[in-house]
Length: 248
Length: 52
Image (cartoon, chains in turn orange, yellow):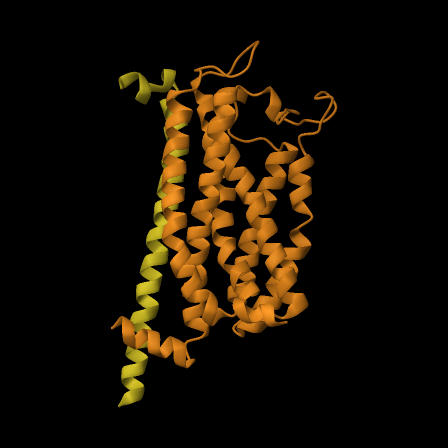
């Protein structure tokens, strides 16, 4: 159990502060180069027969945001589970710190999806399995955050919202598999089965670089937020008091 | 440059998507920095009161 000592709020706070600028630089460099490559080094059309026109370029934010919405939910649920099993405060704090960024990416996936759906499918919204399950994921994030802030005792809030996060985990595979509709006439899946191997390499790489960039961005916001949470919750400890005096 | 902003006539869709992404990510960072400043200022005030 010695390992847990390295993951106490008091030791993680300065570590996160040291790592943050590196992740910020990586995020800026990868997002900017991903956008450059996506807009200037890719063909103007996507697909063979009946190709998508320039609006397909929404893909470089839409797909990475949708992936991040699921990855960050897995992160929230994983930290919640670790917190419940080992009763480690920092894991609950990290779970709580990752949720708002996850909610933002879920909203962005839905928003950019609407602006892609309008020119390509002729509709802003449809109750297609994947759109519906992504919307439920958005409500799960909001529910997690609302439940956490509704309970005054932070230890109880941690445990209650952790349980909600773990129960909601069932949505992630639903979103992931909701493309697997082999016969579009049977199930109304607007997201068809597709494979990364079939993609034009420049488009694929721009998308993957953007995903990496959003991961780095998420590390920055999670570290910033977890530092804020630590400051509030550890306000009565001598190390936070010393830190506040030093910051003056 | 004009052709870049026009996006083949799909400027509304492309820039609404990237614009919202930019707004939300920048707002999130600004909010986190402001929150940190607010917390530190409040903790400093509390210390001053306790010292008196």
